[in-house]
Length: 152
Image 1 (spheres, rainbow, N blue to C red):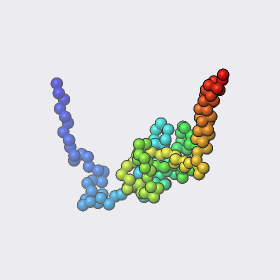
Image 2 (image 1 turned 180 degrees about the vertical axis):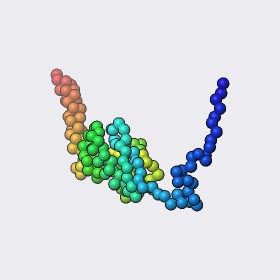
Image 3 (image 1 turned 90 degrees about the horizontal axis):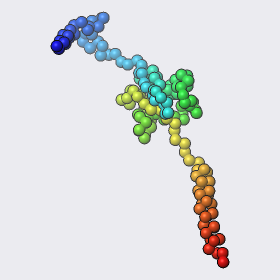
Image 4 (image 1 turned 90 degrees about the vertical axis):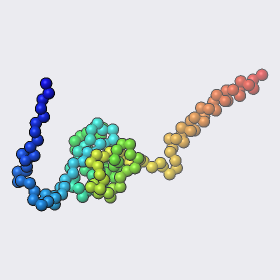
């Protein structure tokens, strides 16, 4: 036996103050935005409430502060907001401009990660050491082969 769907009665869903007259409610604007920011290697997003006029830099600062205040794990190695970038998602390669307004981004979910560290001016010293070690390891068997072939 099928149950019958109840009838909709929109007149019962009126606001307490009644229906807005002639677009009176159209002048309302957002006063706060609830933004979800997922921090790299963290389990869940940090929820941050910010004004819609805020810039990306302010959201980064608020998200880092909220993450540290909540005592989330893993701990952030650096709490300086300048050390982080904001992306649309973890799969987005380009970071958002720090001067961009949040209202213009079209999303309320973001991904926060550390800025990539630039390579030292002289190159990566660990990579140089690894190359030297691998070349020495390659020469050892070659020297043994030469010793064996030169024996009478």
